[in-house]
View 1 (cartoon, rainbow, N blue to C red):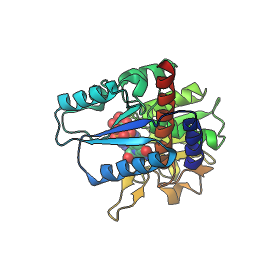
View 2: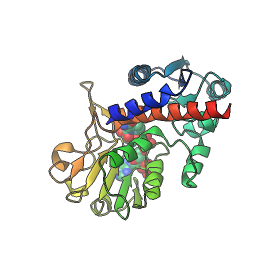
View 3: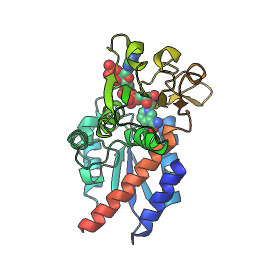
View 4: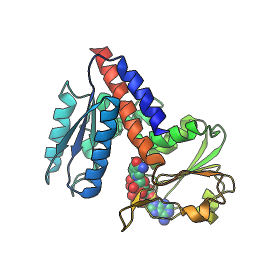
Length: 271
Ligand code: NAP
């Protein structure tokens, strides 16, 4: 599915007479982040988007904000993202406000989330957009369906819930204080899991035949990734279950590139 999205991006870029640039601010040094950034660079190169990686070492909140201001003001940059994890004392909401909403291709500016909540055009966080793209691609009926999202982070749970609402699903959001989680999740036609705990969702959480989207990406000691869903237990119960790795992850990168291509088109049209 990621491949069909990226081929659409390549086609959209053919109409531009310049190469869009995605700036990736990396405010910490760690192997998982470096791996992810390399995968964005590779995917961007394939579709014809230039990637400018800006690595910072132990920056203060003010330094992160100043870099995002500078990238937002740079006319040669069309999309700006700030990689997590962030240094201690820095929050994404705080620094995200320094990304120009026109270039906010990963929906990090709280203004972008506000626009999403208001039903206005915006770039939702790429992972939440990827959840919806997977459901659309698989032609999962959403209108009138009960969609349950487990997790309420600003980057995944909340925007995914808002996007599902836009599709006329009846949406329930669960979190760590939800009473009797299994009673809620097992009534879901569509279950989106973004918790960050390996194998957290078991068969008892899933309605037979439900479509389950596993957003979790938890590193294992052997260097691979596992989701937030116990795949061996849930696969026999669910109607469909997205894989980890290879499900939402690659579609997230594809959505980031689609948003960058859109941003470049809009910025070019605005002059
Ligand atoms: P996060 O910010 O840590 O949020 C986790 C959410 O799970 C919180 O809302 C938390 O509730 C909830 N939660 C924790 N324990 C729970 C419990 N026992 N019962 C119910 N809810 C519980 O994590 P995130 O950034 O949203 O990421 C979630 C997962 O998605 C992680 O595995 C992450 O690696 C993955 N992810 C994947 C991609 C991708 O591209 N595929 C992108 C981003 C994230 P409270 O709010 O009450 O604390």
